[in-house]
Length: 103
Image 1 (cartoon, one colour):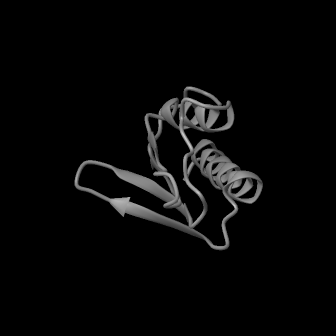
Image 2: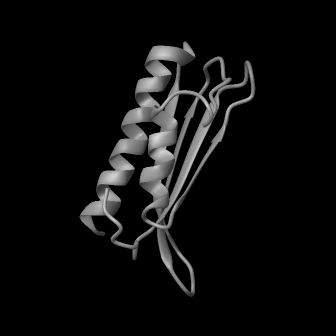
């Protein structure tokens, strides 16, 4: 995979782990990274889940918004699911043939 995809995936995982440690009061974090092959494209799927307090949102802070921008510049998608008191799941899907829009 391209260096741009590797860097984006690294930052998604690093920011998620940082947020879990600093804000979530989580006792467990899972990181899963897979490649997904479809007929018309391949992508890198990154998912980070913690069992913390939840309540994270893309609208608050610059960390998650920065990740969203970083992933979207590569034609990818970033989502955050973080209901209160139910943990947080961050998902990124980044095409392996990502546009070279720069980081």
